[in-house]
Image: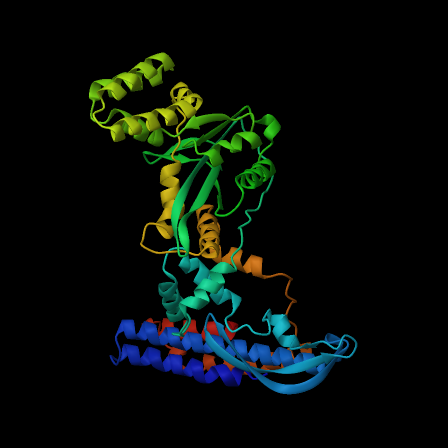
Length: 461
């Protein structure tokens, strides 16, 4: 282990950079970039050093590799990390009983045989892809990771590894009322008809936040190609895990009346359906056109649940229609109103309950999936919807990605204590050298603070 020998030249070059900055050789922006590059260089060197030291420890200590025999040493591997690309050498082993071959140090680090990009970098790529195009995400993360080059295809593959997010549950809550809102986004398909990306979110009501009405404790779920009933069953499982349903007195299901939304009443039979006001007004306008008096009469009939009066208004509108197409539009609008009559009466009866799913779909799904002219594959749309839902639920996309990819717990890194003690002695000597730098013994100044901070950081590394 040669930590001091490896890091000391880099540390001294950082000190030189500080001095160059203060002597007017570079401006502050250039200094920041150079410092970032040097710190990435330190990170790469340390990671390489740790991996090779672990490899050496496994090779020397047979108790750490029971049954494994050395096949060959010095096999190279490159991996893209958060600090940049690191290259290291490791030992190849063969198990004398199972005849299995493996690089044991790679397994300790969580690197699979053909992995070229580390999970932490992929997690950053997925997180960026939630808001940016794949190629832009690749450039942004590549620049942040030491100026490396990443491809849009790497981002695509990482996104498709992102499964349905899991939000942990502390304990089941008791609430009197639950609200379930649902709507869908229509996403362009690369290979044919548009796909329907469905969004359902459950919450506990609304509260005022700086003059805006915000929902309380929302839980978002999405589905692209799932059967509607299976999707609602999954929603029920999530709700049941979070709430004591026996204590819930009222459940409202709100949406535009689509068949897949109405399917939710089969899973939540005690729920009352409330039609989305946005879609109701859309069909009222379609029925009445520009006839304001008839529009006023139709809205009044719906407000008071007077079906007979509503039918008379529709009949009058049909008689006034001048074309066959206009008559067809009126009848289609009336068909929608009739099919959702109970939801409409519920909308006017529960005046403090209304659906805002249209806006949530726009914010959670449409902003990434359909607001720009792009086409998606079925897999791509499904997994991007998972990413967006994870983000909407207030979870860290990067942390969730790593959790999903870590199929087994990684071992704690250990090296023989006597070897560590040797390095500690070297560190004490290096610290004494740093303490003897004259400027660190002089009066406090900007240079003093900069170098003192660097020396302490180095001493604690």
